[in-house]
Length: 254
Image (cartoon, rainbow, N blue to C red):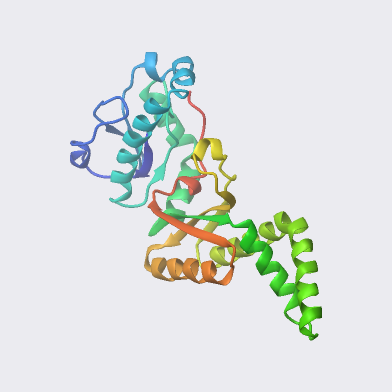
């Protein structure tokens, strides 16, 4: 199962799409909701085979790309609630039962994402630059002789080195709060393990934000402004993405 969307007439827009197993995708309708699904082999997508396949990074990457291609195609047509990769139901009736049971949740999620797109902002800390910035801020307001000012800066640097983790967390929280102000919704995600990301950078913020499509320029400008305002923290903007972080109606396979 790929997405839930408002009911659409016909399936012509799906005719050129292939799913995660190369299967043609199709729709299942219940009331005013449509689920986009595909039939996949259980010897690949059953519970036990999936556990093994998720350890195969090449398979996982190719499957995730195929899943996202279907989701992205639906997002381009209108409000869409994407389901997580490998959400598997054993038959069509169980999909329709999900639509019926969670109708209010799907309706609320569709209303939330309507006219909006997900963006990601990641913040990476530079320990040396952060230490210098914190020390500079602590010593800035003190009127003293050049020699005393130098000693004050050195003491501030030593203090900042001891508290740099806390300082980075506080700055990341302020950046997140200000980004949420410019978005319809925002969430802080778990920081990515370098072993997974392949990056050795010190991640201090991993945020996702649901932004009105007509306020995209304002949001991206805010990211640029915050990047300049907080020395020692480098911000990376990613997107636009389907609103995976804001679906809010996920349920395990059944």
